[in-house]
Image (cartoon, rainbow, N blue to C red; front, top):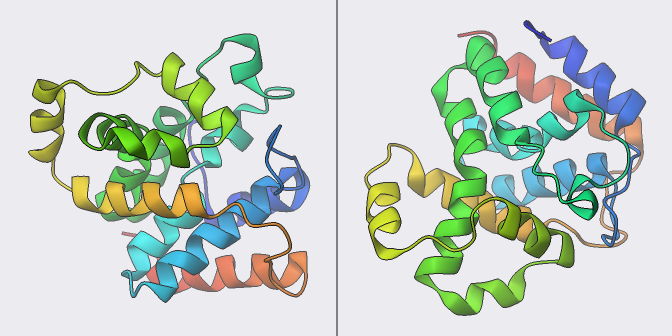
Length: 187
């Protein structure tokens, strides 16, 4: 998909957002909504809230069956979604999405106990994505613009997997997403 518009994203979540993460108690849509709520409750900017909503959009765009990590596959979902999001909303939305996988590697390298917070699927993907960053990689990551937002997003990503915490309905959640995208407009 070379171009994407906000209504396409809402439609994609409407059609494919009920897909479950294997081993997780939430669907793609529930996870996206929860991450966005955590960002909102933390006082994040509208751009970071939208990045939190859309950080796993690449999974839906690729439409791969099942859970790629169970097949030993890194789907590089962050690299799929980020350029499409940048074309619509710019780097303040796209960069945290692009960096959220690196943020996981960074946090595991910088704080080894962080690994214990990761779900089984996140642990499988961590291995496929290069494992914990060494000290040199950590220093480079810390020099990357927007790395702090990516670390925040990563924390919400790990926390946003709560069974039973969701908007009143799927359509209510999608209305929230639409409203946020409208508020940010196009860059």
